[in-house]
Length: 162
Image 1 (cartoon, rainbow, N blue to C red):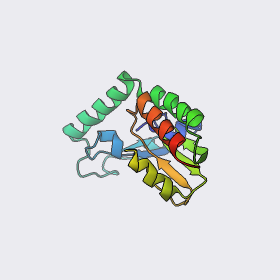
Image 2: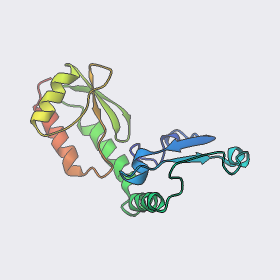
Image 3: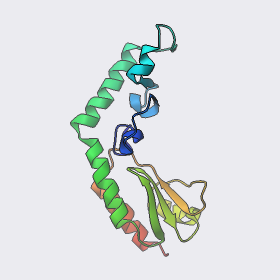
Image 4: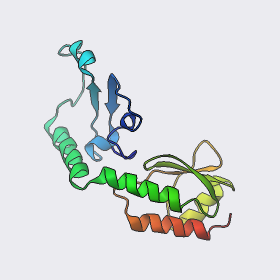
Protein backbone atom coordinates (compact mmCIF):
# COMPACT_ATOMS: atom_id res chain seq x y z
CA UNK A 1 0.00 0.00 0.00
CA UNK A 2 1.60 3.19 -1.18
CA UNK A 3 5.16 2.04 -1.80
CA UNK A 4 5.11 3.75 -5.18
CA UNK A 5 4.16 7.06 -3.53
CA UNK A 6 0.61 6.67 -4.84
CA UNK A 7 -2.25 4.56 -3.48
CA UNK A 8 -1.84 2.29 -6.53
CA UNK A 9 0.94 2.24 -9.15
CA UNK A 10 -1.60 2.73 -11.96
CA UNK A 11 -2.22 6.26 -10.63
CA UNK A 12 1.45 7.15 -11.05
CA UNK A 13 1.05 6.55 -14.78
CA UNK A 14 -2.39 8.13 -15.19
CA UNK A 15 -4.05 4.77 -15.84
CA UNK A 16 -7.62 4.11 -14.75
CA UNK A 17 -7.94 0.31 -14.79
CA UNK A 18 -11.28 -1.45 -15.20
CA UNK A 19 -10.28 -3.89 -12.47
CA UNK A 20 -7.65 -3.59 -9.74
CA UNK A 21 -6.72 -6.09 -7.05
CA UNK A 22 -4.86 -5.35 -3.86
CA UNK A 23 -3.79 -7.37 -0.83
CA UNK A 24 -0.84 -7.82 1.55
CA UNK A 25 -0.34 -4.34 3.02
CA UNK A 26 -4.04 -3.55 2.84
CA UNK A 27 -4.66 -5.20 6.22
CA UNK A 28 -1.42 -4.09 7.90
CA UNK A 29 -0.20 -7.68 8.23
CA UNK A 30 -3.63 -9.28 8.63
CA UNK A 31 -4.72 -11.28 5.57
CA UNK A 32 -7.00 -8.98 3.61
CA UNK A 33 -7.54 -8.23 -0.04
CA UNK A 34 -9.86 -6.23 -2.23
CA UNK A 35 -11.08 -6.07 -5.80
CA UNK A 36 -11.82 -2.57 -7.10
CA UNK A 37 -13.91 -2.33 -10.25
CA UNK A 38 -14.93 0.50 -12.55
CA UNK A 39 -18.63 1.33 -12.64
CA UNK A 40 -18.94 -0.42 -16.01
CA UNK A 41 -17.43 -3.66 -14.69
CA UNK A 42 -19.27 -3.47 -11.37
CA UNK A 43 -22.58 -3.06 -13.20
CA UNK A 44 -22.11 -6.54 -14.65
CA UNK A 45 -21.50 -8.21 -11.28
CA UNK A 46 -24.26 -9.89 -9.35
CA UNK A 47 -24.47 -10.92 -5.72
CA UNK A 48 -22.41 -14.08 -5.26
CA UNK A 49 -20.16 -13.58 -8.32
CA UNK A 50 -17.13 -12.89 -6.12
CA UNK A 51 -16.68 -15.41 -3.33
CA UNK A 52 -14.40 -15.07 -0.34
CA UNK A 53 -13.76 -17.07 2.79
CA UNK A 54 -13.60 -14.00 5.05
CA UNK A 55 -15.12 -11.42 2.71
CA UNK A 56 -16.40 -8.42 4.62
CA UNK A 57 -15.33 -9.80 8.02
CA UNK A 58 -15.50 -7.08 10.70
CA UNK A 59 -11.88 -7.49 11.85
CA UNK A 60 -10.47 -7.33 8.33
CA UNK A 61 -12.60 -4.29 7.49
CA UNK A 62 -11.53 -2.51 10.70
CA UNK A 63 -7.87 -3.16 9.93
CA UNK A 64 -8.17 -2.00 6.32
CA UNK A 65 -9.83 1.18 7.56
CA UNK A 66 -7.05 1.71 10.14
CA UNK A 67 -4.33 1.24 7.51
CA UNK A 68 -5.93 3.76 5.13
CA UNK A 69 -6.52 6.26 7.96
CA UNK A 70 -2.89 5.96 9.08
CA UNK A 71 -1.55 6.48 5.56
CA UNK A 72 -3.69 9.61 5.18
CA UNK A 73 -3.24 10.99 8.72
CA UNK A 74 0.54 10.59 8.73
CA UNK A 75 0.85 11.81 5.13
CA UNK A 76 2.90 8.74 4.25
CA UNK A 77 2.51 8.97 0.47
CA UNK A 78 4.10 12.43 0.21
CA UNK A 79 6.86 11.09 2.49
CA UNK A 80 7.47 8.18 0.11
CA UNK A 81 7.72 10.61 -2.80
CA UNK A 82 10.07 12.95 -0.92
CA UNK A 83 12.37 10.22 0.42
CA UNK A 84 12.42 8.41 -2.92
CA UNK A 85 13.64 11.64 -4.49
CA UNK A 86 16.35 11.85 -1.81
CA UNK A 87 17.46 8.27 -2.48
CA UNK A 88 17.65 9.03 -6.21
CA UNK A 89 19.63 12.23 -5.71
CA UNK A 90 21.95 11.12 -2.88
CA UNK A 91 22.48 7.35 -3.18
CA UNK A 92 23.98 7.08 -6.65
CA UNK A 93 27.43 6.87 -5.03
CA UNK A 94 30.14 4.30 -4.42
CA UNK A 95 29.24 1.12 -6.31
CA UNK A 96 25.86 2.48 -7.52
CA UNK A 97 25.79 3.75 -11.12
CA UNK A 98 22.03 4.26 -11.52
CA UNK A 99 18.73 3.96 -9.67
CA UNK A 100 15.59 2.58 -11.29
CA UNK A 101 12.02 2.09 -10.18
CA UNK A 102 9.35 4.18 -8.50
CA UNK A 103 8.74 5.30 -4.93
CA UNK A 104 10.16 2.72 -2.55
CA UNK A 105 10.23 -0.03 -5.18
CA UNK A 106 13.78 0.75 -6.24
CA UNK A 107 16.73 -1.00 -7.80
CA UNK A 108 20.27 0.19 -7.29
CA UNK A 109 22.26 -0.66 -10.41
CA UNK A 110 25.78 -1.58 -9.31
CA UNK A 111 29.20 -1.79 -10.97
CA UNK A 112 30.13 -4.86 -8.94
CA UNK A 113 27.89 -7.91 -8.46
CA UNK A 114 24.89 -7.10 -6.29
CA UNK A 115 25.60 -10.04 -3.96
CA UNK A 116 28.87 -8.38 -2.95
CA UNK A 117 27.15 -5.06 -2.28
CA UNK A 118 24.39 -6.84 -0.32
CA UNK A 119 26.98 -8.48 1.92
CA UNK A 120 28.66 -5.14 2.58
CA UNK A 121 25.31 -3.49 3.33
CA UNK A 122 24.38 -6.31 5.75
CA UNK A 123 27.72 -5.81 7.51
CA UNK A 124 26.53 -2.23 8.10
CA UNK A 125 23.12 -3.43 9.39
CA UNK A 126 21.23 -2.48 6.23
CA UNK A 127 18.90 -5.08 4.77
CA UNK A 128 18.20 -5.10 1.05
CA UNK A 129 17.50 -7.79 -1.51
CA UNK A 130 18.84 -9.19 -4.71
CA UNK A 131 17.02 -9.44 -8.01
CA UNK A 132 17.07 -11.49 -11.19
CA UNK A 133 19.63 -9.01 -12.50
CA UNK A 134 23.02 -9.79 -10.90
CA UNK A 135 23.85 -6.07 -10.85
CA UNK A 136 20.71 -4.79 -9.12
CA UNK A 137 20.21 -4.41 -5.38
CA UNK A 138 16.50 -4.20 -4.52
CA UNK A 139 15.28 -1.64 -2.00
CA UNK A 140 11.75 -2.28 -0.72
CA UNK A 141 11.56 -0.26 2.50
CA UNK A 142 8.31 0.21 4.40
CA UNK A 143 6.42 3.45 3.89
CA UNK A 144 7.38 4.54 7.41
CA UNK A 145 11.02 4.97 6.31
CA UNK A 146 12.63 8.06 7.81
CA UNK A 147 15.25 10.57 6.70
CA UNK A 148 17.78 9.01 9.07
CA UNK A 149 17.44 5.69 7.22
CA UNK A 150 18.24 7.37 3.90
CA UNK A 151 21.25 9.01 5.57
CA UNK A 152 22.46 5.57 6.73
CA UNK A 153 22.07 4.08 3.27
CA UNK A 154 23.86 6.98 1.56
CA UNK A 155 26.72 6.91 4.08
CA UNK A 156 27.11 3.13 3.74
CA UNK A 157 27.15 3.28 -0.04
CA UNK A 158 29.78 6.05 0.07
CA UNK A 159 32.01 3.75 2.17
CA UNK A 160 31.63 0.71 -0.10
CA UNK A 161 34.31 0.52 -2.80
CA UNK A 162 33.09 0.98 -6.35
